[in-house]
Amino acid sequence: MTFQRIADDTVQGSVAGLIATVPMTLSMKILHRLLPLHERHPLPPRWITMRALKMLGRSPPRVPFARKALTLAAHFSYGAAAGVVYRYANRRALHPGSGSGIAYGLAVWAGSYLGILPAIGLLAPPKRHSLRRNALMIASHVVWGWALGEVTRRMEGLPRAPRRIASWDGSRAPLPQSHGRP
Image 1: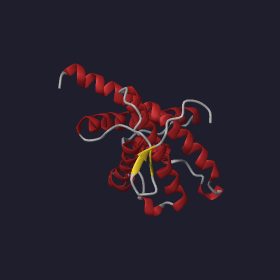
Image 2: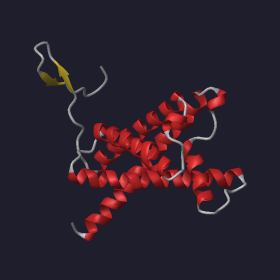
Image 3: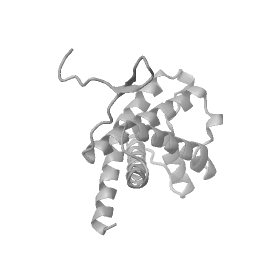
C-alpha cells in the first residue's frame, strides 16, 4: 500500500465518519426527547467528554456553550476515527454498504459501551442504564452505521446491491427497477 493510498483512505474514512455522525447526533437528540423526564440526563457523549477531562486533571468548562462545543468536537472526532477503521476494514474483508455499516455500527456500540468505556471508567456498563437509554444509543449507532456504509459506498462509486425478493418457489429474484413514479 502506498503512502498516497493510506492518506486517501484515512481522509475518506474520516470524512465518511464525520458525515455519518450528523444523522446519528440528530437521532440521539430526537430519541432523547422521547425519554421520560427522569431519564433525560445528559447523553453519553457529554458524560464521557466531561469525565475524560476530570480523569486528565482538567476541569470541565463552566460555560454551557463551551461544554456543548467540546462534547460535539469529541463526539465527531470519535465518529471520524471509527470511520477510518471502517474504511480499512472494507479494504480487507467488508463490502461497503448499509448492511456492513449497520453491523459495524453495532460492533462500535458493543466495543465501546460493553468494553472500552466501562473498562477505563468513563461510563457505567449498559446494565446500569435503563433499557430505553440503551435502546436509544443502539438505535443511534445503527443510524450511524447505515449512514457510514452508504457514504463509503458512494465515495467508492459502487452501485447499490440489487434488492431481491423471494418468489413462490423460494428462489431469489431481483426486484424490477423503477425509473420514475409508479
